Length: 419
Image (cartoon, rainbow, N blue to C red; front, side, top):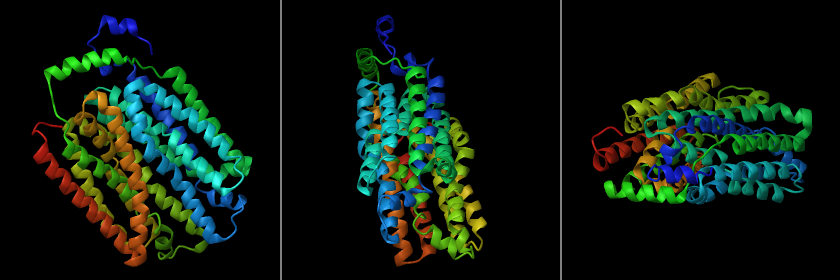
């Protein structure tokens, strides 16, 4: 990471050029780290209510409420601090943020295993979000380090690693407690993240030199002064929020909805888990391919096309008569929605000056986590006050409207050249 000699030899080389030989290896490590950290964070889903009960909560309604608060606390923490960590990445380098996230999450995950009451559980889950965010830090590193012509593909590969972790985590959490106990599972999770931390420390390379970057930005700014496109950024942040909102909107109603499809009560939770995981499976299949497609045909086309396709796929989910039909449609939805986040991140990177890329990608992460919080709230309110089927109609309509917004922004605020 020290490269004063290199900086003196080539003082006008930018960050991307100086790290051209590192980004492939860094991508592999970041994919591994994103996978392992998200496995550790999501594997508590099957047994979280049981752990809440062990911590002294007795009534069923209180168990459900505290489980939801504990689960959502991590996303809230990450949404709050992602812009801060992105700003610090711009000032002090991307690798330190990766190391900070991995070490912090390894420690906090282990501490969750020794919580004495539900308040400590919620507090530690919140701290995990505040100090963690390895996947978010990975997007900042890869999004700023990879050459622009390969950024869609690289961010798609990174997204695949994160999606796989979210898919595998609950599966691991389903059987690991029977071997090591619920508390032991958190120690295993902390150890897994520690492995990712070690890989990050010893394998990730970064040539970061603030003085050299400042000279490079000064020279390039004189040659081309492109103002920040705030309208474009606003539309992209709203779209990123909509991605997670659409995926999570059925979370509060999924068990009740599947119960109306003649699924036996003893299989209800397992079937709901399969349906919820189906979209992640679909996204794993197409994320890298759609990211590469954005590199070839342009990110705006992929974003608008994926929004329209996902909005249309939402509609038939309201008319299914068997649970497997819903699962299949969720797989298709995952395949169409997978191209959005890599393409959005690519355009966000292009819309701002290099010195603000990390901070802006941090705001992008906050938008995604906001969608992860808002989606279930909207879905729950619509399902309770209007009807379960209307959740799919409203979500689909929002996605189509978002596609229209992106088309308007594309024609009004961007150049006709491919972006």
